Structures are given as C-alpha cells and as structure tokens.
Amino acid sequence: MPEADCAFCQIVQGSLPAKIVAQTSEAVAFEDLKPQAPTHLLIIPRRHVRSLADAQTKDAPLLGDLLAFAGRLASEVGLTENGYRVVMNCGSGAGQSVWHLHLHLLGGRRFQWPPG
Amino acid sequence: MPEADCAFCQIVQGSLPAKIVAQTSEAVAFEDLKPQAPTHLLIIPRRHVRSLADAQTKDAPLLGDLLAFAGRLASEVGLTENGYRVVMNCGSGAGQSVWHLHLHLLGGRRFQWPPG
Image (cartoon, rainbow over all chains, first blue to last red; front, side, top):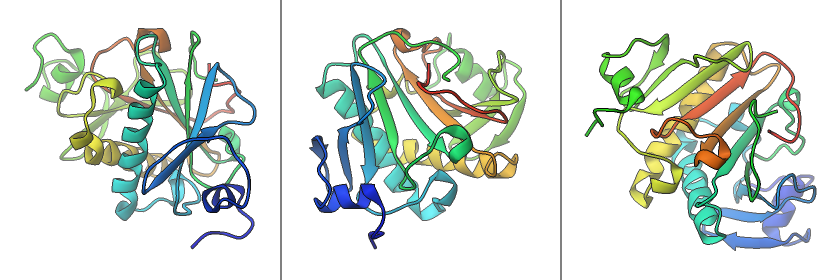
C-alpha cells in the first residue's frame, strides 16, 4: 500500500512531479532534486518499503531488481565507460531523509574515497 | 568458475586469508583491509561476476541476495540504530579496484554527503 505522506509513493502514483527517466513494472528512476554528480538518479521500488533495515527476506528479489535496473540504466545513460557509484543510505545517521527505500546512482565525474 | 588471479575468488575458496564475518550459500562477508569506518565489510558473491556493468538479467536474484544479506548483517552487527551506508563502485573511475563485484557496508560513524 502506498503511504499517503510519502513523497516517493506520490511520485510513483504521479501526484508529485518528478523528472522520471525510466520505469519498470517494479521500479521508477528519476532525477535527484539536489544532484551530487552530473548524473544523479534515484531508483525506487513502486511498493513502499521504508528502508533496507525494514526489508524482509521476501524483498530480496525486489532489491535485486533495483540493483540490476541501476546497472542497465547506467549503461543506457552512458555511465559505464567512466564508472559510476551506487549508494543506499539506511537510517538518518547515514543520510537517509526520505523513508521509502532508494538507490542513488551517481556518475559523470571522479569519486573520492571514503564514500562520505 | 573462479578466476585464478582474482583475490576475492581466492578468499571464497579459502586460499587467501580474510577476516570472514558471515557466509551464506551465495555470498561471503569479510572485513575490508583498509576500513573507512568503525565497521567496514565487503560482501561478495561466491560466483565470479566482474562488476555491476557485467551482471546480466539472470544475476538479479544474486544481487538481491547480496543486498538483503547486507541488511541482515547490518542488523546483526548492531548498525541499524545509528544507520549505515551501502556502496557499490562500478569501474575504476568510481574506485573499483578488485574486479569481482562487491558491496561495501559501512557503519559506526556519521556520513557526509556527497558520498565521495
């Protein structure tokens, strides 16, 4: 069930605008509002899952779909040759600010280590 | 098939030592040799997959197992309350230095944004 006050559920439902770049039956990819790289997309499941900590064993296939989708999308938008980083924050201490699980896909520049 | 010159395949096979903290039928988790946080684990598939860019559609379940394993492990080692970050680098430009797909699980400190 979508959560009424979840911005990402609203994007999935089309009631909140977003620059959607690709969709599958399970996931939606759209541009981050505060991009941290020339390409910075968010990849979210259509189904509301609060965070990786709240994902259950039954959600493993969905998580796999998200990560595989990130890889395909990276290829489609031309990030593969120069490399890209995929990041998931779990919990406010790690920087999660929207409580609908999401992957960040960042590319188009060099990246530093550590990752934040 | 394991790759003879792949350090992570050698860890999976037990011919290269590593501080292994958990294993499943599909994946192995061990301590990063150059930790970037109080907890810094690498989670790898037993099967050799070069990078996310080389993963194929058939690998989606394996990718899901890895991410779900990261979430369970984070809970088991006590990272959930204060949050944690999961990172995958794809390509040398993003910092990938071992060509056997792996997830970084980092926790135990605050994280900055952008993620590197």
